[in-house]
Length: 136
Image 1 (cartoon, rainbow, N blue to C red):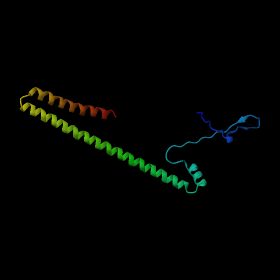
Image 2: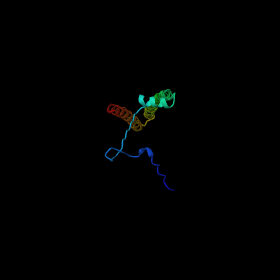
Image 3: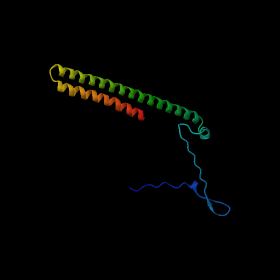
Image 4: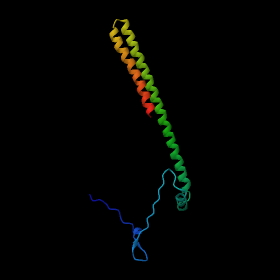
């Protein structure tokens, strides 16, 4: 397979000044964001009537989509946090319940280990979570 080389643009040929030296003029423009600057937008409108309005509609549609996407991500994040807290609460309550049950049937060592590790784990999760949030 051979690579195709781009063809040379004949408009980029160098021009000569009065001294016979080759000179070239290069201009570049750039913009960021959904909308081009007014001068470029005016050029589009001149070439294709109605293009400026179409570009405005496209920019509005793009921003609307971005806002909806950001809102959906935020909502999913809230739901994930809520699920984690709910499951953590259920897990902690179950472990403490199992610890109480172990004491009532005569296994205080098991109850101490089960209850102690649960409490230490929950406290650690809350403390570490607060430390991470405070750094952000």
